[in-house]
Length: 402
Image (cartoon, rainbow, N blue to C red):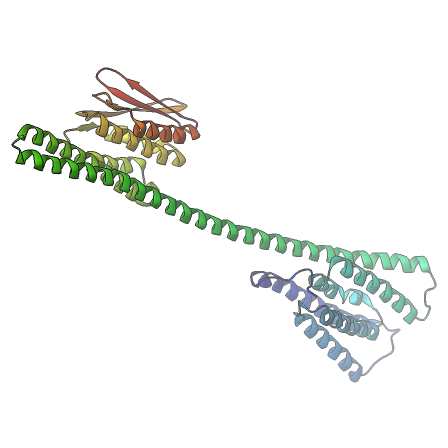
C-alpha cells in the first residue's frame, strides 16, 4: 500500500539537508549521552566493551536513518521504524536516560512523517514519548514516586517532539505545494504549446482558404476574359477585345494585391521579426504600395515612431487595422494619395488613414473586414469610425494609451 507522500527526484535534494541535520543531531546526542553518564559520579563505571556495544547501536541507528528510503512498502517501513526505535531505546537505557538522550529519537519521528500518514505518525510519537517516560522512571531506583512530576516531564518532552513533527509536516506540505505548482506550470506550458499549434493550424487553413478564394476567382475571371478577347479579335471586334483585356488586367492586379496581402499576413509577426511597431508598419507599407501602383503614401518617421509608445498588446491590433485600411483603399478606391496621421491625448491615440478618393465599393468584403477590425479594437477599449466625403474616405481608429 502506498504511503502518503513520496518526494520526486527534484525534491530528493531538498530532503538531503534534513537528513544531514538529523544525522548531526543523532551524533551530538549520542556523544552528549556518554559525557553525561561519565560525569555522573553516581553511575557505576563500565568497561570498553560496554561502550563498544553503545557505539555499535549508534552506528546502526545512524545507518538505518540514512538508508531509510523504502517509500512504497508499508510493512517494510513499519519494520524499519521499529528497528530504529529499538536501537534508540537501547542507547537511552545504556546511558541511563541522562541529559539530551531523551531527544535521540526525535529525528526518527520527524522522518516517519515522510513515510506514514499524520495520524499514524502522531500515534507513534505519543506512544513513544509515554513509553519512554514509563520506562525511564521504572528504570530508576525510586520508580514513579510522583505522578504529577512524571506527567509534567511527559508533556514537556512530548511538546518538543510535537514541535519537531509539526516543522517536518510543514516542510513536507511546502514541498508538496512546490511539486503541485511545478505540475500546473508544466500543464500550462503544454496547453500554451497546444494552443499555439492550434492557432497556427487555424491561421494556415484561413490563409489557404483566402488564397483559394481570391486567386481562384481572379484566375477564373482572367481566363474567361482572355478567351472572350481571343474570340472578339477573331471577329475583328477590337474595342470589345480591348475592354476584355483591360478587365483581365485589372482583375490580375487585384489578385496580385490579394497575394501580397496574404503573403504579408504569413510573414509579418511583430514579435518575431520587428522589434517595434513602426518597423513593422514600414514593412507593411513597402509590401502594400510597392507593386507599381500610382499611389503615394504619406507617413513620416515621426508619425510612425509615435506608435511605438502603444502597449504591446495593442500593437498587433493596430498593425492589422492599418493593413486592412490600406488594402481596402487600394482595392476599392485606387487613390493617388494615402495619408496616415496620429493625434495623441492623455487617454487615447487617434490614427486617421485618409485616401483622396472615396471607397466606391462597399460590399461584403469591406463590411467583414471592418467588423473584424472593430472587434479587435473594441476588445482593447477603443473604437473604429469611418468618414466618407465626396472626395475622400477616412478610417479613424482610437486606441487607449494604457
